[in-house]
Image 1 (cartoon, rainbow, N blue to C red):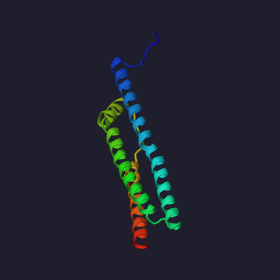
Image 2 (cartoon, rainbow, N blue to C red; image 1 turned 90 degrees about the vertical axis):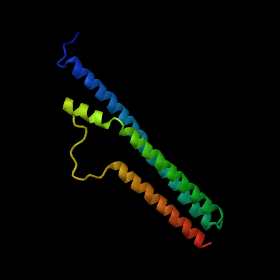
Image 3 (cartoon, rainbow, N blue to C red; image 1 turned 180 degrees about the vertical axis):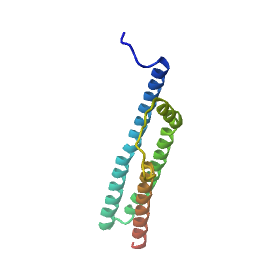
Image 4 (spheres, rainbow, N blue to C red; image 1 turned 45 degrees about the vertical axis):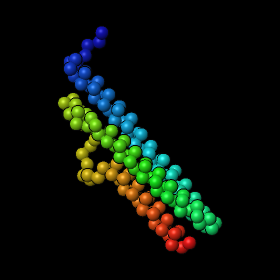
Length: 140
């Protein structure tokens, strides 16, 4: 057996850290895959609504926009729960990393978190959908 420089306790801590890191990365991959879903929803809703509105199918465009708003709100709720799941073990994860001398990220000057930017983008898409819905309703 190859000699190790680490004690059993350090190896156990490192193993726990790796497990927590893998879990966090898995949840983050799921969280960020929601962006692709958001793009698909919004491309279909905005493109389809504009097409229906320009072809004088005025009763279908508001329905499609309303459906898009509902789906985007549901996606926002799912993203929020994904991020809460990712944060469950944050304290333990960072404490283990600190005790092992591991820094997960470099220090940042800007304190804006990336999940907050996604929430802002979702809010902007909902606002655009509502504005276009109001435009279609007022001009029909």
